[in-house]
Amino acid sequence: MEETEWISDRKDRLTYFIESYTRLLTRDPAPRVLIHEANRLAPEHYRIIRQIWKRGFDAIRDGISDLTISGKGKKLKKIFAAFAAIGMCSWVFYWFDYLRRESGEELSKNFAEIFLKGILKH
Image 1 (cartoon, one colour):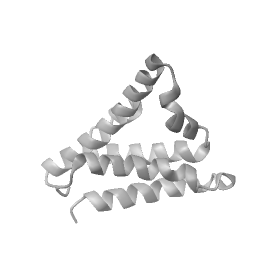
Image 2 (cartoon, helix red, strand yellow):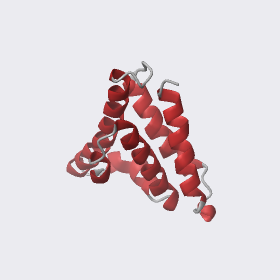
Image 3 (tube, one colour):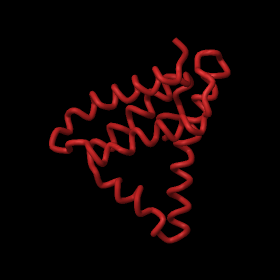
Image 4 (cartoon, helix red, strand yellow):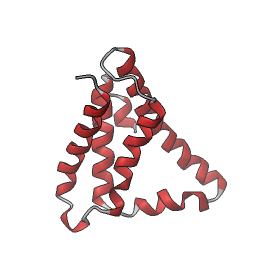
């Protein structure tokens, strides 16, 4: 998150976030446990995890909003689009072949391309 927040251009920020998050999730399937079992943590720990997740969500939503305001982005429901980006990346756990981790880089580029082509005006 810290690296993402330093990027001023919203399109570049969205690209970086999607690519970085996808690469992270293709390196190791272990975060799947955190995503699915976070609500079983002690309330104070769960609150910390949710704050981190909210920062990511806010970064994506705000980036989409800024692109729309600038005239570069389509008029979409920002909340739905942000959840779509996060969901697209997070679903990797269920089908990614972790024996071929080297394809994670290519996948991250494809995800960013697919998402941005969907929200940007042509």
